[in-house]
Image (tube, rainbow, N blue to C red):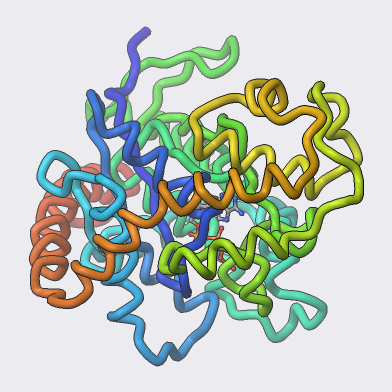
Length: 354
Ligand code: AQP
């Protein structure tokens, strides 16, 4: 048995202001993973059309996500940073995956149900097929590890199902062409062309929740700006949002069990832990028994100290976008060359001519 070469892939949609959830759930992990790994980080602009068909400034949004990657510490020379639409092979593989994936699988996707809302008949086909394009984004590089927030777990399970079905349906063709490797999935030996992707979701804040409602995830599309800390917020805005964050009347518990049934307190402790690179247990050891009037200012200081340098660098990069454009162009070329290697083989496996 052998293993696929480790390749880290992840993407962020250019659909509005990046927030603390995107940073802690995704971008900060991207930065940590770049040491010692082959990493590809993508601004998924084709996915952005599923959120909204016509954007006022999609190009500006694409650049600002790329700027956030660079400002957070991602090295665009060592890693590949690019925008999805620069590599048409993503869409080509997604079409094949649309034919592999089953309607029953897609119907179970909770993000589609949430985003489509009540009037599902009016949702776009693109929104429905989003997870199939996401599987193609990763697998066109035969990506093995995907750092994401907890909300993307189900989509990654679907990517595994698609990869597995492709491997099994085309097993003979894959073998005959001399592609693929022998792996075990569970106990089963499988001759695989595509790897079984692994989500990297761990950490104290895998799902950062809204500051106004501890039962809803922090989201770019929440109409209330007070619900999220944007990466472009200044110190005053961060301070105001944390001070106004919903809490309950009790102080902080000393034990983790004391956070049960207190989603807002749990969320703020998780945010503090993630920003300080600690566990929630460490944070409660420090602040247990204290009131939010003590904890919130400490959280403000930590959030401002962590985010301000990133915000400053993002602003600087966005003043003259030629540097960002050059990074995306170079990344697009390098990504396209790699994706084309996979697509040449995939075209051969499925039986297309040339
Ligand atoms: N609240 C969150 N907590 C932890 N991780 C999160 N992510 C998003 N929200 C949270 C992670 O950020 C990465 C990029 O997300 P995306 O922009 O591609 O898509 P999304 O999950 O749809 O993000 P938003 O901010 O919630 O946007 P809208 O409002 O447009 O739906 C992903 O790894 C995601 O898990």
